[in-house]
Length: 138
Length: 136
Image 1 (cartoon, rainbow over the protein chains, first blue to last red):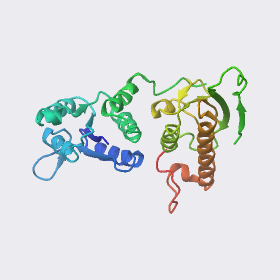
Image 2 (cartoon, one colour; image 1 turned 180 degrees about the vertical axis):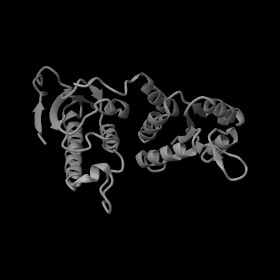
Image 3 (cartoon, each protein chain N blue to C red; image 1 turned 90 degrees about the vertical axis):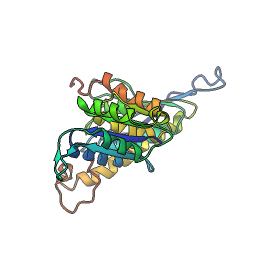
């Protein structure tokens, strides 16, 4: 089963989403939350840290792959930097998704329980981009 | 909860040996929370156990006909309490698939109407309530 990594500028946002994902996910599904940066004095600030993302990936380097969802902006750069730091065989099993963070995470958790591949799961998660969230009211 | 089964299959039994059954039914959402994420997850998991295609359409508001096997599409139904959905299945195990999916709606309605009747559990503010409304 794939491993899911959630990257946000906010520690609480990442942790809160991971909590929701665990509620929705099948048994055995793993999700790691990475949010915020520590200032070295025990305080958290908003931001993303490539090394922390590497650690989150390594928390479960699943042979089925690792899907990385990011919130926005420099989270993408940090995720790319993190993947660049990995060994080539592990890089090949990582996918930084273009999916929106919340929808993507929920879809990934559910699809992972249906024996989908990393590519299929990412495709399902990214498909949300083309779907209207708010429909016209009757 | 209205439940009318309308099998539309078997009419061509003579001409088609390998019958592709198709059947449909209507259900009304009585859950005060509407069709929420937790139920959506269960629907997707159950629907994926069948080979037949299973679709749903919200008859109470403009909605696309969605694939019940996809959580993304299910979310598009935006079904609230009181909305009527048309569920349809087509394929080799259509009857079983439809029954299983419709059963989930029934269970959801029963389970959540009970919790919903305890006044304000919809807001999640009720203390001591172990009803499963933490995810809507």
